[in-house]
Image 1 (tube, helix red, strand yellow):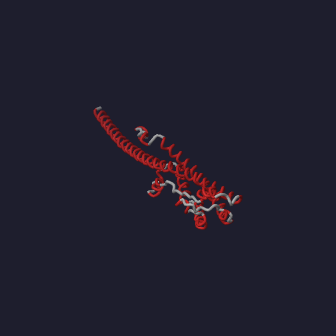
Image 2 (cartoon, rainbow, N blue to C red; image 1 turned 30 degrees about the vertical axis):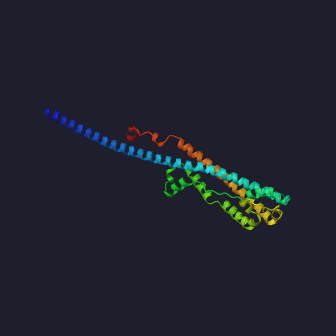
Image 3 (cartoon, rainbow, N blue to C red; image 1 turned 90 degrees about the horizontal axis):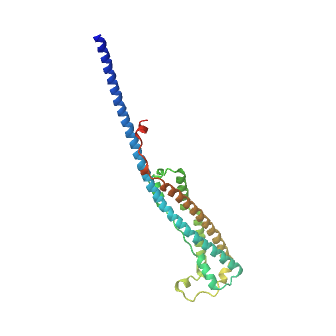
Length: 252
């Protein structure tokens, strides 16, 4: 009888030890899982804060780009319209008064180019940080915008024509009268306007600058779309609002 009680006691002691060991293992495993979960949450939180910082910098750049291309479009449309008006005048009334021709010449022989604001994007690319932007569509739009804006074929072609036009006809434009406001302005630009080569250059100036204006309008549309997408993401709940993982979720 005493032996039986001793055996039961020993089996009970071993059972208690096993339960204690199992409890200790459970606590250790739970602690490790919680630590990993908290570390992953903290890393994700820091990454999202960094992403938001970059998104705000990108938003600032694209606000500037909207303003840049709005101004460029206005200037291009003025050149396009002036070139067409002057061409029509050259074809129908080459002996028009100098007072009418001179302002049109000033608008035609005017050019404005401005680099887009891409500092934040270039900084991300150079630091290999573009992957911080989680939105694949936004990354694609940014890359496409940068490629088109930094390699503007239509602008280079139009600029080359503008240089040729200015070089060829500068001696007949009487630019000096703009500078010193003297009375040397001719009574008529009939010889210049009647020159078929000048008319061809005007026609090309009109067509090429119209294409540049169309490109600017597309870039403005792209910049507005990108800006709206960035603002939508920065307006959402920031990473600091992310909740820490719950204990039961981590353990599972």
